[in-house]
Amino acid sequence: MLLGTQRVREDGHLEIGGIAAVELAQRFGTPLYVIDEACMRDRCRRYREAFGRAYPGRTAIAYASKACLSMAICRIVEQEGLHLDVASGGELHVARQASFPAPRVAMHGNNKSEGELAAAMDAGVGYLVVDCLEEIERAEALFRAGHPRSRALLRITPGIEAHTHEYIMTGREDSKFGLGLWEGGAMEAVQRLLASPALDLIGFHCHIGSQLLTVDCFADAARLMLDFCHQAHTEMGVTTQILNLGGGLGIRHTASEDPASIEDLASTIGGTIASGCAERGMELPMIMVEPGRSIVGEAGTVLYTVGVVKTIPGVRTYLAVDGGLSDNPRPALYGAKYEVLFASKMGAPPTQVVTVAGKHCETDNLFMDVPAPDVEPGDVIAVPACGAYTFAMSSNYNRLPRPAVVHVLEGQADVVVERQTWEDLVTQERVPERLARD
Image (cartoon, rainbow, N blue to C red):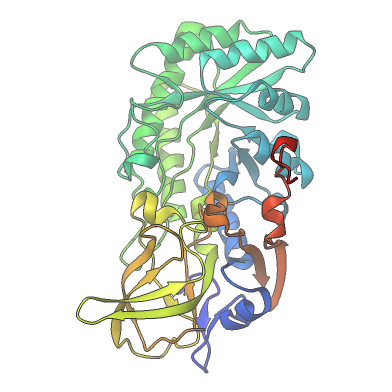
C-alpha cells in the first residue's frame, strides 16, 4: 500500500517526497517520523474544496492539532487557509509560537485549567468550546478579574454510538465530554451562557468519535444537533451562527480498510444541514468540521532499522527494530493494524511471515504476521499511515529519546523537530541536596 507521494523506484527502493527512504534513514537516523508535505497539503485543499462545493461560502475547516502538532504544521495549516483546533494550553502555546492567527483557533478540553482558560481568553481565540457548567463559572471568574470576553461554542454529547474502538468513541451518552441532550444539561448550559457576561454563545459543537469509515453517523449527528438548535431557538431565541460537527473521518492504515472519502463526508454533512434547516425553517449556520487524522494520517511514515533477526524454529521469526511502544503506542492501546514495507527490497517476494517487535521492556510486538522477504540486520522498514497519534503520543518509556520529525517535499528534506539526545532526558531533573554525594 503506497500513500501520498510514495513510489517504488527502478532499483526497488521506496521513495517519499522524491527522496529514498533509506537515504532519509541514513541522513537523519531512525526511528524517524517522515511527513509527506505534498500529501498533507492535498488533504487540506480537498477539505476546503469539497465543503465549499457542498455548502458554498459557509464552511470553515479546523485542523485537529491533537493528531500531530509542530510549529511547521501550524504554518502549513495557516497557508492552506484552515482554522486550528487545540485541546490544551501546550497546543495553544505551540500555535502562538508559530504566530498562528488567534481568531482562527478553537480551544477545546473537558477540564480546562484556570491557566489554560486565561491563556485562551487573553490570546483572543476565535472560539472557546465550553464542555461543562463549571467551565462557565471559571470563565466568569476570569472575566471579573480583567480577562476579556470570549465567543463560545457549547459542546453537546448527542448520544450516538459510532462504529469505532470504544476508547475513541466520544459522542455516546456515557462520555466525559460535553453536555447530554437526554438529561437536560445542554439546555441548562444554554441558559447559563445566555446570561453570562464572560461568554458570547454563537453556536454548538459535537464530536462522535475517531477513525470512522462511513459517513452515515455524521448525518445522524447533524440531524440531532439541528433538532437541538431548533429547540434552543424556539425556547430561548438562540440563533445558531456556527454548527461544528467535529472530526473523525478514518484513513487507510491497511489495504483492507476502505474509508469514505472527504468528498463523501462533505456532501453528506452539507446536504443534511441544508435540507434539515429548510425542513425546520432555520437559517443556515456556518458549518465547521475538525479533521485531524484524515489530513495528516496518510502523510506520515515511520522508518525503523532492523537490529536483530530472531528465529524460533516452528514458532516465529522476530524482527527487532530500534523503536516501538514509545514512538507508536497505538498497537498496544487499540490493537491498531498497519502495513509494513521493506524500504530497499520493495520488489522482493515474501519468503516468510514475521513479527516486528519493539525494543521496550514489554511484549511490545508492533506488527504481527507480516509477509517479509529475506531480512538482515541494518535493513530499513517503513510503516505508512503513521502521521496521526504517533509523534503526538510518543513518550520516553525506557528513557528512549523521542525521534526526529522530518518534512519532505519535492526532493527536499527538513528537520522540523530535532531528535532528543540522552542529555535532553535529564535537563529537567534535579537531585535534592540531601541526596548529594559526600
